[in-house]
Image (tube, rainbow, N blue to C red; front, side, top):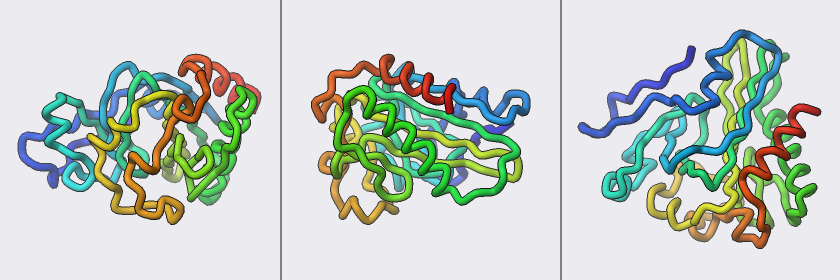
Length: 215
């Protein structure tokens, strides 16, 4: 079982909740060679990456003012906002031959690109190590947690959430891919809807699920 505890470096009075979203069941379940879950968050929240701290990653004055809960996930990457206007893709593989993380990102991100292409979304491409973009605007970020027994891939696709929420809650990351070129969240991030595609989160969730079943 993988549980997340608040860091001793977090400011006093700040509560970071244990990661208890639906895909934690993948990590807690019986050993299987491969499993996945494609799900839609039930509420708006912020989620820190495994090595993130609130003082570096979140605009805490806005988080507290809006009463936004904070969680910390077991995988790496930077802090994200989750909401019902997004789709999360979680894939677990156990007993896999060791491969570089880039190969997992390539396999699963290209699968998602192909699904979105099939739904009519154009000008998609993989960027950086783990992102998917429409032209030069990020719509999906992914991360990986791994140990000697398993690989856990975790991706967040922004279907229609307002980019201003990311600007309001997330600080500029300390590490960024070269193609970001210092752009703010407002200038760097987009959504499927913002790019002109009227797709519902549930429609995308079902399409990705079907592709993973066939993978």
